[in-house]
Image 1: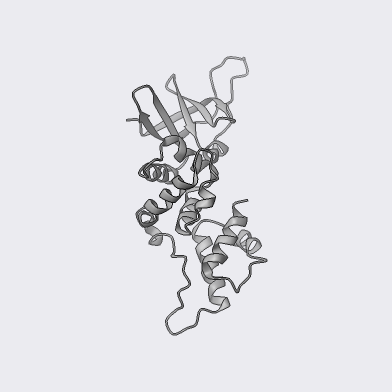
Image 2: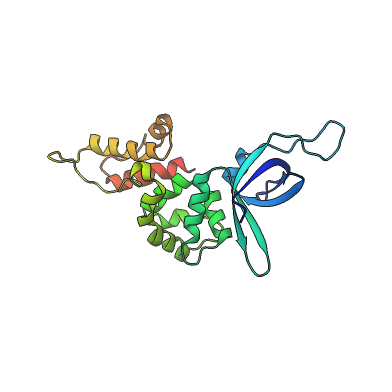
Length: 217
C-alpha cells in the first residue's frame, strides 16, 4: 500500500481537485481535497519549454482504494486530514468520494466540531452526501473523536455545564465558547468577529453553533 508520495506537481486540475505528482519519473494521479489543493504549489516547468517539472518537492499522505475495476489514490497535505478521511470511511455508507467531498467542505477540526454539535445539516451540504448519511456520520463518529484528538481529550462537550459552586453566567458561556473555537484553530480576531452579534441568552451549544456557522462562510 502507498502511504506517502514525495515529488513535484506535474499537472493540476483545480475543477476536479486532481493532481499528477511525479515521483522518480512516475506520475501518480491523486484525488485531493479542496483544502489540500489550495496548499500545493502550482506546476512549474523549465525555461526551455520541456515538460520536465522543476517546481518544489511536496509530500502527500495517501490512501489507496482498491476495487475490482479500479485503483484510486487519495492525497492529503496533513496526517490529520488523512486520519479524518480514514475515520469517515468507517461510517457505513461512506466511501472515499463521499469522505473527500466532506473534507473539501470543511477542515478536519471544523468537521470534528460540527460532529460534536450534531449539525447534520452542515455535513449534508457536501456534494453527494444526503441527510441520512450525515446523520450516520454524527452517530458513528461522535464518540471516536477523543482518539483522533488526544491532546485535547477530545472536542469539548457542547453542553452548558456550570463550574463547581458557580452559576453558568453570561461571562462563563462566552469564555467556554471562545475556548472551544480556539481549540479548533480559529484566531481570537476571527472568533471575536463571529461572536459580535451573538445572543448571550442562548445556550452554550447554540452560541457555538451560530459562531461556527459564521466562521464557515
